[in-house]
Image (tube, rainbow, N blue to C red):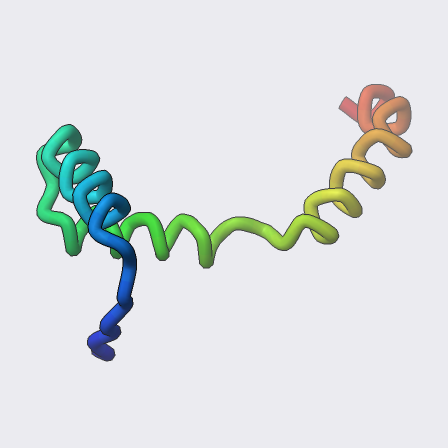
Length: 65
């Protein structure tokens, strides 16, 4: 496992601490979950392509259902 150090301004750090407390999480867990969410989101171009294909073929999918 890699440890990263990130410099952020004090206001953002406090906002993150407050958000973590709100969710009842340690700050490190909130940050890890946020990073995981960011990394698992599909790329915008891929999402647009999927949406296009689904819309283009919606009638076919409806008939096959």
